[in-house]
Image (cartoon, rainbow, N blue to C red):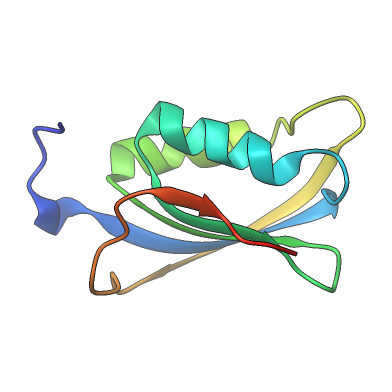
Length: 101
């Protein structure tokens, strides 16, 4: 359990562009989310990007996104990550889920 009060949490919509479909990117994102204590969702989008809704504390979201740049393998390639901070949804996500494509 974190020492942070819940009011310090942030929510970000994160869109990852590059070679991110068919390379295990969603599973990679979930593994990172579990490591950093980030909750939310990840899904493949029809336009070839991966969309994440990530909730966590600023000191966990930042390293989470930094690791996303590395991708799951040499088969993947991250060209761009767009981030938008937004109001936290109610209820706050309690786990990290991979949504079906």
